[in-house]
Amino acid sequence: MHTQYADGTDFITKDGSLIRELMHPNWHGVLKQSLALARVPVNTSTLLHSHKHTEELYHITQGCGAMQLDTEILIVNPGDTVCINSGVAHCIRNIGTIELVFLCCCSPAYSHQDTEILSSINA
Image 1 (cartoon, rainbow, N blue to C red):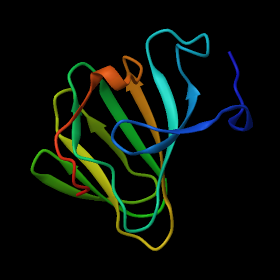
Image 2: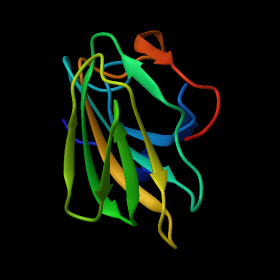
Image 3: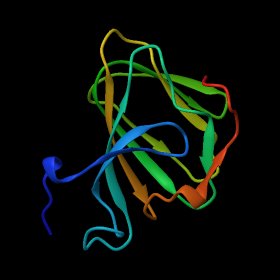
Image 4: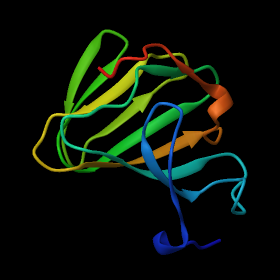
């Protein structure tokens, strides 16, 4: 299985993230996970949300962010990887001066149905 970034299309997820699926069961041969590239503009954030079934890994490739995991706040930079267990409330804010970019791996694969928005106000 092989995909190219240029073959994908950006879309907005339920939490407000701008993502491009790089591998997803709905469009590719992968079965149990998904991989997406997410972008968060300067001074914006995703909505606080959780996933009942999905575990996520965020790997930061560009920018600086403040990652909320329940009540804990982590400052994340390029090269950092964060594990978000299912059921954990989370969001990420771009606190840098350039676009925040990260890879997001979901297992099982991302779905809007497994995303529960916990706050309608960006963190």
